[in-house]
Length: 236
Image 1 (cartoon, rainbow, N blue to C red):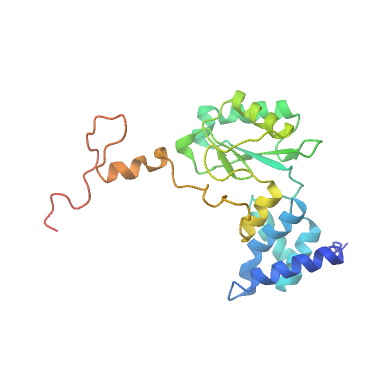
Image 2 (image 1 turned 120 degrees about the vertical axis):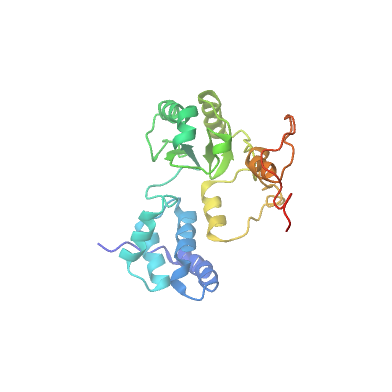
């Protein structure tokens, strides 16, 4: 059966947002990824109703929208918790403890991969790579980084989230909910005062290779150059 539409007041609000997003692209279908984040911000996942909405806005079939929504893992097909916890289980994080963190979090929360706790606070997912190997093992909450985790620190992290205690990422902006994060990913500004300034730049481990390539001394090292600065000793 065809998916039900959003209630009129929800549809009107989302349609206004969709028009703003679509107007940013020379071809309307290019707005599909932001629109999927938009409907995910509404329901906490990409529902059949959300897929119908996106298809109608872009004059696509629901099959075309579904093909995209199921290809990218950031779009959830089941409701996420208020805080979506992703544990990297790719090579480096795994060998440094990511597999153990993921296994112990599942046991601690009483849920499995891609499931949500009964109170709706926490969902969990194993992530192939969080693009933060220099901080392994890494856990993300609503796509904000929590670096150098252990099973104990990860359990404390989810317990603090469930109890409503303030939790600060290792780097990046302070946490907001999964739905709020999805709206930001759709392309709308983060309205929280000072949040953009908190994003910061790459951390020292991430920049170490760049500094070595420039011939700079790393803190705590003897200062021996591993790679000479580009152009040094050449006729250029």
